[in-house]
Structure formats: structure tokens, C-alpha cells
Amino acid sequence: MTGTLVLLRHGNSEWNAKNLFTGWVDVDLDAKGEDEARRGGELLKEQGVLPDVVHTSLLRRAIRTSEIALHITDRHWIPVKRHWRLNERHYGALQGKDKKQTLETYGEEQFMLWRRSYDVPPPPIEEGSEFSQAGDARYADLAPEVLPKAECLKDVLERALPYWYDAIVPDLRAGKTVLVAAHGNSLRAIVKHLDDVSDEAIAGLNIPTGIPLRYDLDENLRPITAGGTYLDPVAAKEAAAAVAAQGRK
Ligand SMILES: O=C(O)[C@@H](CO)OP(=O)(O)O
Image (cartoon, rainbow, N blue to C red; front, side, top):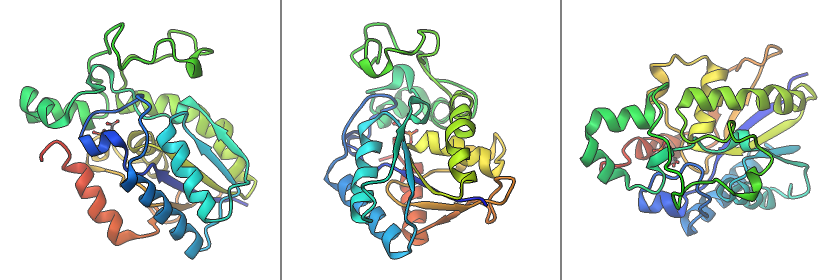
């Protein structure tokens, strides 16, 4: 038996609100993000999608989103697994930078290469940057060569897949409903893998904040419905378009 996968991007964060590149910087949800997380929980509850286990990144915006949503669904007690491999893409030297200013400074083509190309990473974060994660206790056990200085989506997929196979797949194979609370780009990587999206087409795929995306998987762990199903498809379409437009207003 194969279980149900539910992907949940964290609610709006303080830096989403300010239009800043975030990556591994550990910013919190803002009030809108907390509301979105509550709404995500209500959608799960209304539609009877009740997680048996939750996997999150090590970043508070994903952790808090999952906690708020699980509280609403009365599933605050389920087992929790957390891993850096579900973290947002490390945005390198762009972390902390304003998206609109970056677009104006570097132009549309470079901005989109950094933001959405599959295999072009942003410039690496400078040593000693206030937005670097060097020395952060949660990554203390990581070998220095594993701690990213910048990542493209391909890098994210490569580091997320071992966790997918080692930790998430066994839960799905056990027939569980598995909630993965993570980030725009780590979830894009998982969706790319699940739906076998081409390197070109993945550039146009944006994941909205706080709206659960449900995948029922066959015995080969392939989606029964390509692209999965958002629990609020109308809101998801609108919110994904807003993510795509970031930097333009
Ligand atoms: O800043 C980030 O870390 C991500 C997600 O918020 O941004 P983008 O959608 O531009 O990849």
C-alpha cells in the first residue's frame, strides 16, 4: 500500500512580506503567514487529509507552519522528523537582498536565471556575511564541504533526494499520510522529481504559500494525478501567479 503525500509550503514570512531573498536565513512567519497556516490546517481538516507523520526543514517558518496546521487538525501529537535536506535553496550572496532592486540592477535575464533556472546558482555567500549560516548550531554536524554557499535547483534536488528515499518513501510505503512542510524551492525540487518535470518547464512552476498540495502515488511512487491536487485550487492558482511576479512590484 502506498500512502498519501501532502506538500505544504510555509505561510508568508517576514521576508516574503519585504520582498527579500531568504534562502537559509531563519526568518519567522508574519501575521498573514500564520493565517495561511491556519487556513492550510482547516483545508486538511475539512477534506479529511489527516497526517500520520510530518517531515520539516530546520527553518522556523516551515516548522511553525506545520505546528499551526497540525494544531487545527488535532494532529499536534504525530511523530515529527526534521532535516536540513528539506531546507529552502541556499540563495548565496542574494540572501538578504531586495528582489526588485536585484532585478533592476542585473536585468530580467540574469534575475530569472538566478531565481528559476535549473542549474545556474547565484554567486556564493561571502565569508562573514551577516546572512551566512557558518557557525549555526543546527548545522554543526555537517561537514564543511556539505554546507552550501549557494545552490541552484539542481543542487537542491540532489541533496533532497537522499532524504526522500531514506526517510519519506518508507513512511509512504507504510501507507501513511505524510505531511512535508518545507519551502518554495525545496518543494519545487520534489515536484520536479515526482512529476518528472523537464529542466526547462520547472522554471515556470511556482508553489503558493500555505495551501496543501496532495499527491496520491501509485506503487512506483508516481503521481496518480499529474501535478497533484491543491486543496484550494482557485486560491493556489492566484497565489502561484503572485509568487511568479515577485520583484516586479
Ligand atoms: O527568497 C527565497 O528564499 C525564495 C522563496 O521565498 O524566493 P524565490 O521564490 O524568489 O525563489
